[in-house]
Image (cartoon, rainbow, N blue to C red; front, side, top):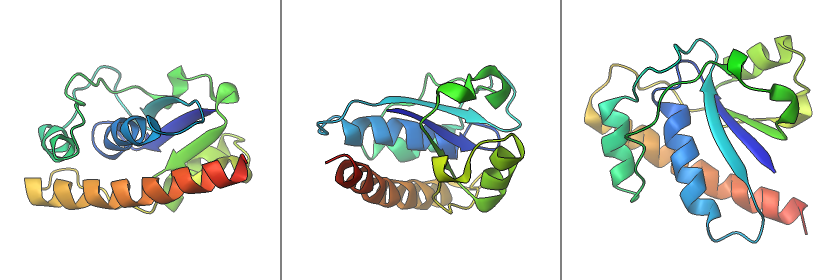
Length: 141
């Protein structure tokens, strides 16, 4: 299953989600290809230092992540788009992504916030990814 995590700039939420999901899915019997992108990302932008710090608490290293614009992704090869907000979902539907291929986490943007805000964001993403992987596994039994 090919999963793409999507946010705005691909420097905070979606890289955290990508890294966390890779770690969580290590114990799954299912095989995943995981990536992330941003709807308005600037290719090559560095991940937010606070996002890196937040993920360290989960033993996940995203320090080498570089932002990727969604226009550089073959979206036709993606099985599931995991987005951070309904606005991201609408933007994907405007690009003809079927609604049944979109899963919304509802995670506010921590961009520009302090380390505590990023930690809270990371915790929210992690808990919702645990639910998501359980749903995926149940649907594939």
